[in-house]
Amino acid sequence: MSADRTSGVTGPARTDEVFSALADPNRRLMIERLAAHGPATATELAARIGVSRQGAAKHLAGLVEAGIVSAARQGREVRYELVEQGLEPGAEWIQGVGGKWDERFASLKRHLDD
Image (cartoon, rainbow, N blue to C red; front, side, top):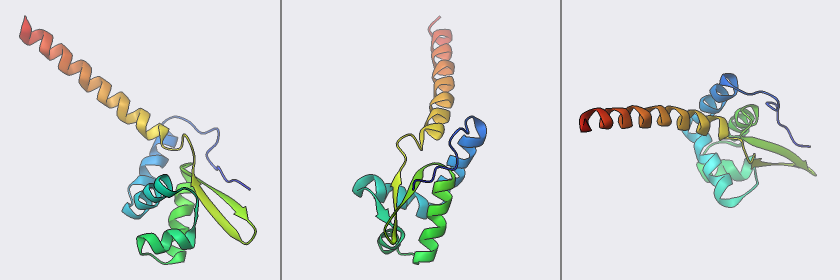
């Protein structure tokens, strides 16, 4: 059973959830670990980043809530994996802000070249 509590949520609220989830360094470590090694349990992730299993489960719940990670039960285990487009709202926001700065720099360059 996969959990994606943010399906259908778009825009600023979704972007805020992604950045809020990414604010914690342990959550970023979990994302890096899942990206590098694929699905894992809370116990496996806890051992990799040096937190308790309960701490890892709490962080993973935040990542699931933000739509970055999904949870799937396999027997007695819950395995977590990255959602393919989970980080996209944050990346789109960064790209939009970066694009505006690119436009400003190009305008300044044109002005200085004149």
